[in-house]
Length: 130
Image (tube, rainbow, N blue to C red; front, side, top):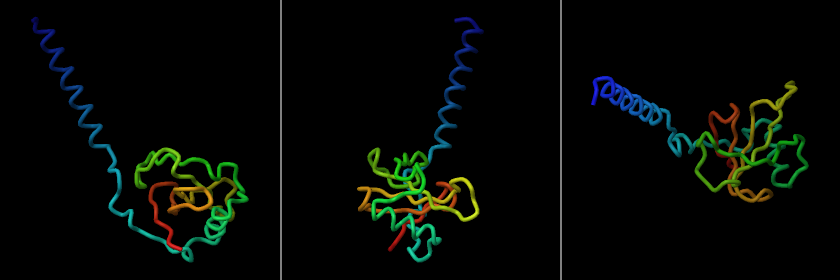
C-alpha cells in the first residue's frame, strides 16, 4: 500500500469517527428531566383556557392548522406512535400571526389523554393539569 493510500485511509477513518461523535453529542434524550413540569388550567393565558375548552368540544377552531398532527421532532414529549399528538394555536392578543404559544394534546381528538402547553414554540412544555 502506498503512503498516499495509507494517509487517505487514516483521514477517512478520522472523518467518520468525528462525524459519529458529533452526531452523538447533538442527540436529544427521549424524555427530558423537566417533563414533570406542570401548569394548571387557571394559570394558562385566557386564550389558552379558551383553546383547551375548544379542544374538548371538538372545535370550532380559528386557525386552519389547529388539530394537525404534531410530529414531536424535538423529542421533548414522551415517545408515542405517529399521529398521537395534535397541536393547537393559543392566540396572542396583538399578534397578527400564529405566535409561539401552543397546546399539544395526545390521544383521541375530543378526549385527549394528556395535553401540554408551550409558550416558546416547542422549546419547552408543561403538562396541563385541569
